[in-house]
Length: 236
Image (cartoon, rainbow, N blue to C red):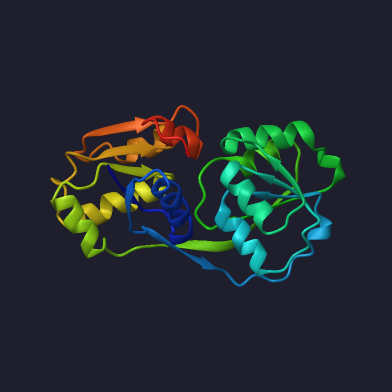
């Protein structure tokens, strides 16, 4: 069993480490690279809480040496672990997806107690800001990083696909699925995926992969990494 891991390098290395503990072979070929954006200093004390929907946002936050004594709301377990790792003290974990995160914030916070700060990347999925605005919250969205698409698959990935040596590819976002599609077509590898099962975090991601001639597409019952791998009986 061999996995192709395509998330940004730091995220892929974390998953690879967990899989290696189970004697599962991986190859890392990031489809996107994270770049931190220059942002004017924000007075976080003006906000009642800060929101993160990815570990990349947490790491970008760490780069700016903001106060750690903030109330934070995070989308899931991996983002929560990243927040804990950088020393954030008041972490509220939605344990799910962006929809669950917005519902948790709406049920636990009061719009009258101040605005919310959403630290995120330029490319985000979901309707978090719109949902919170409709509930009466004032949300400041601040882009503090961007993910830049890879221009090509690396040579080892191409060889592994041509020799049908890849069994599974996890996909965590619609954008990564679109980039993968583009790079597969660019490399003329459309006919090399017959043994590959795509593990998708949502139906929207699966839809972006529907044109590929792959073995199978599996959609996690919940948008968490644990559920993604549980589909093939792997506990991370």
